[in-house]
Length: 299
Image 1 (cartoon, one colour):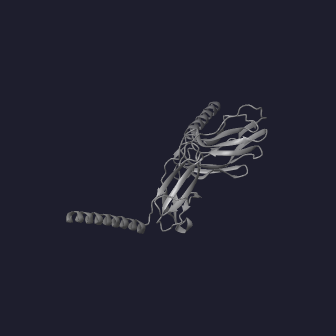
Image 2 (cartoon, rainbow, N blue to C red; image 1 turned 90 degrees about the horizontal axis):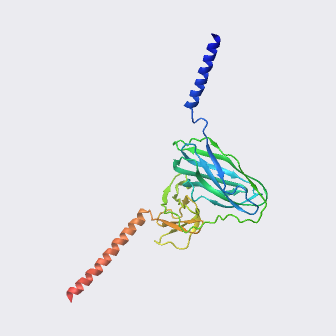
Image 3 (spheres, rainbow, N blue to C red; image 1 turned 45 degrees about the vertical axis):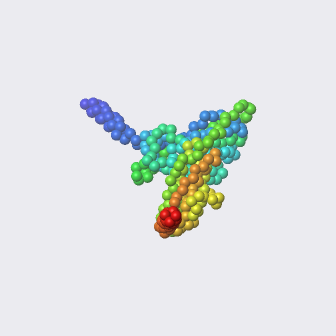
């Protein structure tokens, strides 16, 4: 009898554990960031591309961040491409921050759910034979739940072996990009937490081929921009805090193509002067026409 009870209890325990595992299917799930390269055996002096992806494991992710660490003795970073990234707004666009360290952080409004979401691509030149490791450190992925909940995240070390150069033809990673960045709409705003409440302009453009290289800004009271462009990042603190100037933002991609967005003056006094000027011009034109008509009648 005791043996039967023991077997019965064992079965109950097994069934309970099985049901528990079904009831918590996401407990072990973790989003994964990983590299893929079409060239698994680069040789010395050769360029190769490593694409950095995220697999959300059926979770909706709306923000990512981290650092990519590599050996600068073995690799030379030649280019970072984010033209086809699932990230729409880069808080910290992927860039070489220090020797052997690439930092990034960005946001995808509305979130992303998928198994092969491209974050960005790295193009390296291999410097000498050896084993290459690409590691993600301080990686973060936040859930699109309105609370910024951190998702579980894993990232396996990406390993390649660089061999001696045998003189074979190497892969070409050049891009022919003749398409300018997409149109974008800058916004002027202010916040007491930013530069003591000064007016600033925020902007972001998308380029799905070579990617955005940089932005330039110009403030001018003329309706056409001059040549006083200066490199800028968003948010940009406006020099004309009276908002009486046009603000021109130029987005330049890595192939040199550009798109210019314009923000009209926001100042009420400037708009009133503009309206008064238009009214005055209309009055002058009407007066001139009236004089011509009276002259014709007199003749």
